[in-house]
Length: 247
Image 1 (spheres, rainbow, N blue to C red):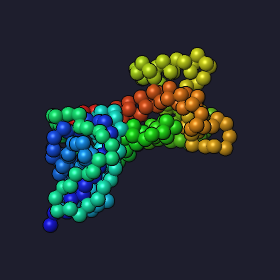
Image 2 (image 1 turned 120 degrees about the vertical axis):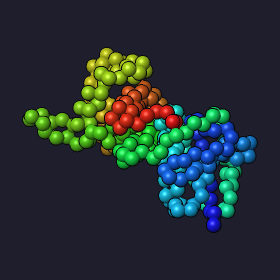
Image 3 (image 1 turned 90 degrees about the vertical axis):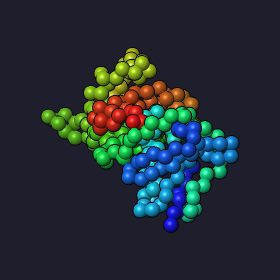
Image 4 (image 1 turned 45 degrees about the vertical axis):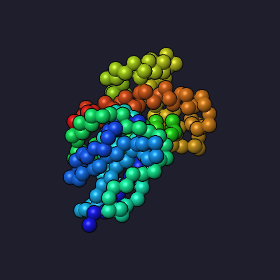
């Protein structure tokens, strides 16, 4: 007996403007666009898959779309049990953006790629500058250990050193402009991003500390975000070989 899971979706990444079926992770996902009364939505028939597995699959799908389009997508969740797909009542108006939806992707086989895409979508979707910054930094942490160690008698942090090696590869205009600005202030960009970004957000015991009410802190992190997001995107594309197209 058919039993459908109905999931609302919020965001502005590419979405079909008409009801569309796609194959993903060995299952068929039915996508519906938003209307004046309903959200854009994903519907999965729970035959051979549990609620939890289906919700995870939906998240994986949204992470691929978020990555391909560089936009946030939130799983609004929903309910299951209907014998037919049921559209999700409207929460916000976020209409589909594409009549053609040439989707031909599947769940990434590499667990690191799955985690990186999940963190990327989290960063693009979350309504918090500090936590968006931290999401991208966690992608960097997939590749480089965040623990000081001694190498040839020197105390180093592989995460900081990884950032340092990635900086010369950056071509983004916004990111390179911020790197130049930091250097003009006699800041080592890699050390600065770690201490005044990652550590300042994660801790609240001693300086530097990010105050989420302080607009100066938020503005600074917004500028720094260009660098860490660019490095995260380069790592996903070049090291994990995750392409940035729907097909």
